[in-house]
Image (cartoon, rainbow, N blue to C red; front, side, top):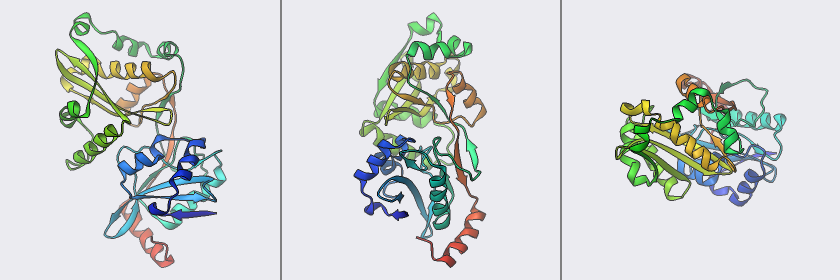
Length: 303
């Protein structure tokens, strides 16, 4: 039986145990991650006694709860010891029948019969770094061979949130509105204070020209941010930083590129020869939401 539990009703010990033993384990479903990206604005659907769980983040608009994926959270979905398409469809049916959904992603381990838009993501699985590097594309290997002048005047350095905050604020791209910046920075700061997030910077001639932000948990290292000074893109600082992080962690951790739908970004990621791991996402327009709202009110299923 599937039931819905509000945040204050969740047994977080059982929830975490279910995630830890799940076949689809993802850092983005963990309590600390969701508490940071959707502070107490998430609940769960649970099957029997935490045999399977489905975290459901939401926002409130005009007093109505709308399921929406929080910032920096790529994948959620169903987490169970063994992925089961029939069980996944039961969770999906419950979700669709009881919630207004604006955007909700499943994970790359969830098999579904219901068709949804598929998004791309790329992973490199644990292996010896030498073997991972050997698979890089010839172009990526060339990018990693820096000119001697660049080598002589550059260094890679782990830095604090405070050191990189001004650089990120000046070079972050892709925000739909200026007000989103503060939200992203608050999340980065919290993750850093909780010791999940690490910043690695490429310094050239004494100043930062590239930064990557990586999140480590659940046996994964995820690229949660890649920031570059446009004046220095030809120096390939981003490639160097990602390669360094892969070199330091790939023996024991999955490296998660966290994306790949934008053509130029996909091309960049593919240079590291990762595996394509697509996942399904439910997306609804505002018009669809209004239609669904009336239906759910009539059925008494708006929570």
